[in-house]
Every structure is written in structure tokens, then in C-alpha cells.
Image (cartoon, rainbow, N blue to C red):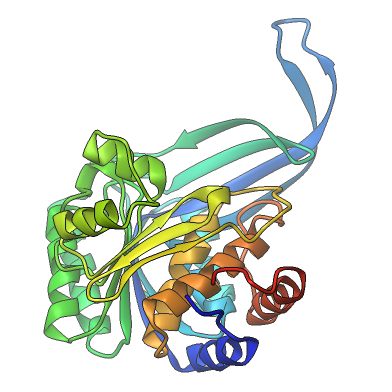
Length: 336
């Protein structure tokens, strides 16, 4: 592809401020307990982390929404929280991020999903998850769908963010895909294994390499244009965007062929939330009038900024543009 100019990237990111997005999916609280390791426990051969700080952050579909808000776009989120302290923390955090929370349903029937990471410096020592990933009660799912249907009447793009935590039942997925079709708005899907093949007709389908390989039960060949085309057709989507971690991205577009974008970051501190950043940028830039390749290019740079930050973090348009500008000087032929 031809290099996307800084001017064009800025134009598209400026337009993102006019974009209205609905994100539907699994909401979760990311909790970080940080400290230092100075000795090994006498009780078992494990390090002792002396806790110095703890922080809570929005995760899952909430992190996609927070990223969209930080990009300047308007975002509403549709999801489920438990009737508990963690749910209140997450609800308030989303409000502070400027996210519309009118589509959130609170229920006493399941806890808020919480991922707790114990960190020593930039090293994650252990993670433990508190969750109920069974399918939502019918009554809760019905409330979610009603909220989704209302919000979808006045939005530019629907993002479906699946973490296999039970919110995206087939009933909710079908409602989201139907809303996209009925209102002629694009859908961007970040899938997980349980419902991987349930998104026929998606505009953009964005798995990572492991997710796609596991779902297909076979090796993947992101550098093979024919394999990418056949896989996209098998998944029945308009654009297959395959994220490859530090190796960048590969995409195949219906009627537009194959493109390969290589990793844009040289420093990686934490990959938590990088996929959420990519989803947010791709959805909003395409809704702002960018092509799938342009959206992927900008998202590739956004992810490169995000992985230089500790924890689940958002990125700003200014940071993305600075990174594009810097890369254009250090590697003037990148992504040709």
C-alpha cells in the first residue's frame, strides 16, 4: 500500500470526533496490585510481592469504549454488571471517561468480572479472575437487546467485543448483527472461541493469530494472499483483519485484495488492552470515512503507542500522529 500521509491520518482522526459508536460485549474491571519482589517465601518457592500500590481500570468492552472516548468520539456501551462494589467502580469509571452508560444492565444474578494482576515492576507475577462466564439469564439478555436496539437507531458503527464471559449469547449477537444490517451501519467484531463462527455478514472480523488458528484447528498463513482470501470467505465477512502481535497485521478485503502491515513498536512494556485499542481505532476511523487499509494503518500505530504503557491504557490522537510522524522519518518506506 502507499504510505498514509500524516495529513490524511490527521484528517481522519479529526473526523472521529463526529463519530457515534455503540459497543456491546463483556465488561470487566482490570485490577492491578503493584509492588516489589525482594525475597522468596519460606512457605513455598514463590516470590513475595511487597504491595506498594493498587489501581482499577476499565477492561474488555469497557476499554474499547474508553479508547473511543479518548479518541474524541462519542460512545455508548451495552453490557452487564453485577450488583456489587466492583460493578459500581466500573460504572463510575466509564462515566468519568465520558461513556454513555444507559445501555448497562445491573443484575444480582452474577458478579462483575474482575481480572486481578499482581505486578512487580513491569513483570506480571500472576493473574486471577473472578467471574461467572455462563450465559446471561433470558430476562437480562432481553434488557440488553432493548437497549441495543434503541441506541442503534442513532449510531455510525456497532462494535461487538466478545471475551467469552457470557454476555454475547447467540440471542444478543443476532440482535447486534440484525441492527447493523437494518440500519445499514458497519459492524466490527472482536471474537472469541465460543461464538467464533456466529458473525456472518460482519464488516470487519478481527481475531488474533491464536484465536484464528484455534478456531480453524489448523496453521495460519497471514502472508499468503490466497489463504487470507479463502479464510475471509469462509468467515463470511467483508474484511478479515488478523492481528499478529509484534509482527503487525494482515488483512484481506472483499474486492480490495491482501495487505500486510508490519509491527510499528520497538518497545513493549505491556500488551494488555492492545487489541482493544486496535478495535476502537479501526471502528471509528472507518466510520469517519477511512478505508479498511487506512484504518488498519492508523490502528497499527495506535497499538504501538499503547504497548509502551503499563497496564490497560488508552491512546490519544496526538500520540498516534506523533508516532506516525516519527516512523515516517526513521523508515520512509514502511508499509509500501
